[in-house]
Image 1 (tube, rainbow, N blue to C red):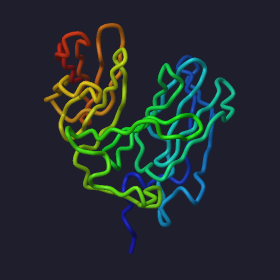
Image 2 (image 1 turned 30 degrees about the vertical axis):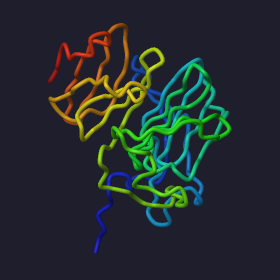
Image 3 (image 1 turned 90 degrees about the vertical axis):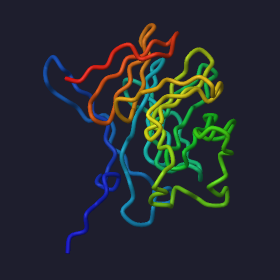
Length: 225
């Protein structure tokens, strides 16, 4: 009998490809296998999730690790893997040189230093301590999944000094530093959020693009093509 693999178990190697849209060619920049000690014992999830590029560096994450590469040669500069890392979805650098890591599996965002020190932790659920439902004594890198999640946050971005995350189940983006500030994304469940000028562009799981004004925090356009 064949065993149906979950989406996060369907890859055996994490790969970063560079696409040349003019020549319609590609090249493999990174092929990576996570160490056994930071993976689930059976059918580990080995793939890259959402990344960030800033100041000549490529910030990538697997489900349980953060890897910072130099561009354009993809030389590994920094590696961080912590017991709380489960189902990471995104990593982004801050202007202070730290990392914001979206720990989707624990409904949590953490800020860590490049040497792996945890600086701040936020639950993405208002009023909840980050460790209410989880234990600091468990190595969640070895836990295949913590689903069902109560929020399933996906993406982190910053508006000035505010830290924001998108929340799949709540269909919104919220400020973790000022929880009263929220962008409602009612059309569908959001995933990524990117800032360009005065606009924030969100993608949803069914293919919508939602454009919100970063100043008013109101949705101005929804595209469905």
